[in-house]
Length: 138
Image 1 (spheres, helix red, strand yellow):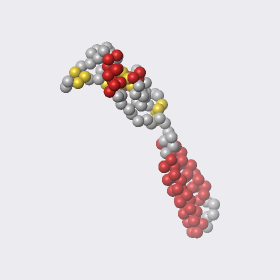
Image 2: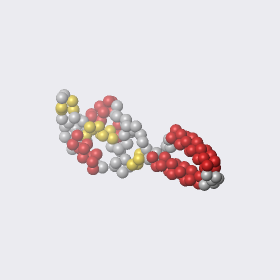
Image 3: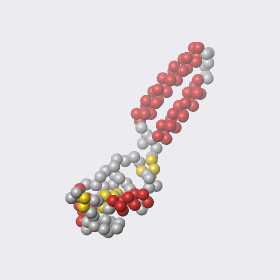
Image 4: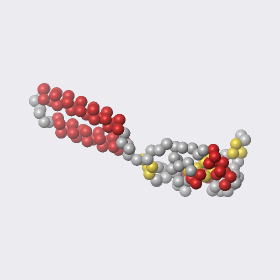
């Protein structure tokens, strides 16, 4: 979505610039129409840059998402997923290892959309499988 605040500030700055540029050109150089085409050209370039900076970004897995906030899985979704997987990695089926009395589990969004926190999108992976999945677009 277009950043409205950025467009409004840019429009106000453009109007002020056009007013002073035309007054200066008419007063000191007797130019009546020479500055307006330049200002319109400048405005078009500024609008293009603004639109390019607010476009959708491409996710590193090739999918295109709008800029969304990352949401983590709630604890009840993690618990349900863990019981479905029987405390094993979803990829290699190895039991999760303990480190400092905690299970080493990486919670992965299956579809890559980090704002989708449904149980059907959650899977527990060991760190090695999660690294492989992340780097190879599985």
